[in-house]
Length: 301
Length: 99
Image 1 (cartoon, each protein chain N blue to C red):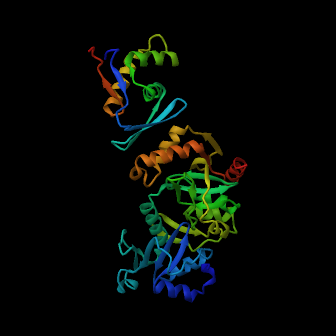
Image 2 (image 1 turned 90 degrees about the vertical axis):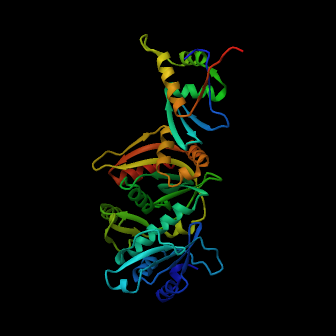
Image 3 (image 1 turned 60 degrees about the horizontal axis):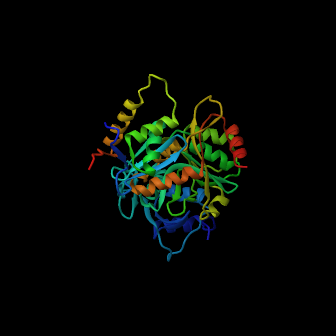
């Protein structure tokens, strides 16, 4: 059953009682929350996700809730909790839906060591995974949103899950998080994308989320072979430049962008080594999204 | 450093190597550190990952792969590299004393 088939009342009821149980990629997530904007966030952006029943194993029990009833009204703020543990400081009430997305990122990055977890956007075309590792501000999510708006399959805009067992990329399609100027860039580039409300004044500036395409969500358990490893760098006014990168240097750059390379030890080294062996590696400078999309579309043929 | 001294990788496969063209990446299981090595260093590790080598054998191998200017002191560079790699725990140097 898809979330979109539930009424708003049913979603709010589930969030306020035992929690809403969603299938997100290969994970089952249970979320409880009395916060109205969280329900709106889910209804607007998670409509294509499956709701799982009460017998399913839950990977992450989460909640977004005010620390006390008083804090719903006075200096209103909210906590993210995972299995009853609160890993972060509370954030303002208005940032509740962003906190859910960040909290879920944290759960996956810290508790999924059967994968090498790379800080990278990843999309698929013609059976090939294009992986875009990068630090915040490198333009990976903008690039990812642009490609997805032109029909590429979204695997993830934030973390690439590379199986240490078989070396394939396992999808975790979720709303694409855009910041600041990227919000307008994508609105201009792809006016048809569905975007949730913009949350202002977060630690990262203004944040908005793009709804993932239904097709990508429906293929959320189908892994893809890695093919291209591309390190993007958005530079205002720069030409579109794709430069080959040596595999040794690509290995080091991937390792730097992993959440759990050190935890996996030799297994992590071997996984990154196999990834760069299987991929063509590049550095990519861009400022023009149309040119970038055209280039990658040609590269995927 | 004498030409007869033997250079090897540490025992128990502590150092794992991946080679691509004139570069390699080493992973030290003991420290968890990852090292990028290029040019001469790559040839050193390519050779000793196949078999143990003496300093003289390493020099011969490097001479067969690289061309240098006349004033380039390859022996000094090699000894410095060996010292650095030894400090990082990437290689083991043993004096080959006659029995």
